Length: 359
Image 1: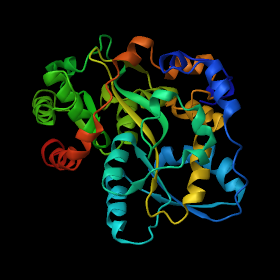
Image 2: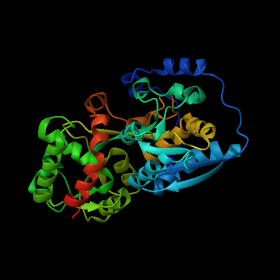
Image 3: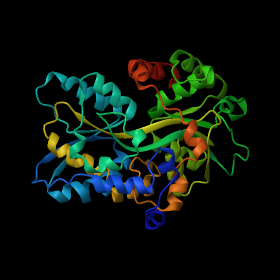
């Protein structure tokens, strides 16, 4: 991991071309950006985030060097998404909330915005937003940060002929060898929907396919990414359906893993942050958003997490970009969910998953 970070250097990427932001465009955008915000004069910022290695990297590359160095004290509210979302939904009744920055995935950001939890962000106060690839600037209430896709991760020593598609995971020869995580329940329902009808917007068909998977393959279900990664490393399972970035992390940690991009096209996922409507320190939140998109910070995060950065000018080496990015064909095949549809169904999906799949 350290070696990857040490190799970082600026270079245009395939994604610069794919998303319409080449090296010249990125440089031009940088030249036209407004001045950087003045150093903040202290204050406290409450950041709601996942825990574990995700938060550790956020602290290491963003919060300590770029936010706390300005005299801003950060207090963390850590937990899984359902619990953190529920807290903010309850705070809608309050005149003043308790959270300033909400780390969240793009789909849940849409849900939280439509439910009057998140508000639009003043991107004029986020200069680094000018470097974000244009096609990712599609939510006025969401700071795009890191993205990946749901792929097939397998032990190359034990699986010489891995499944090349989501559909091949349903073969009984993989019984007891496939691992899933509760954290990706909505992605798995989308996967089932894709297999059932060619789109990711038929949740009922998706659920039926997951019941079929449970009956034929009996996948092992793990609470979180870390537990699934450990199961792959110890040989408890040989195959996982998870983010490409997670598979690369686990391989970098020494597990004998390889990545298979599914023939149907990987389901895309993007992470970022939002501004709660009742945030007590919204001005400091904008300082935080700008730090998230810092070119060097994003390079460090990409080298440590293997997620592709939303900032097209992130200072990555060609080798690292080749590793974490998708080929042009793969990028074109990514399945971006219909988040309006997801928002209407995610609560019911989670309840169904807990009652039907995890038991």
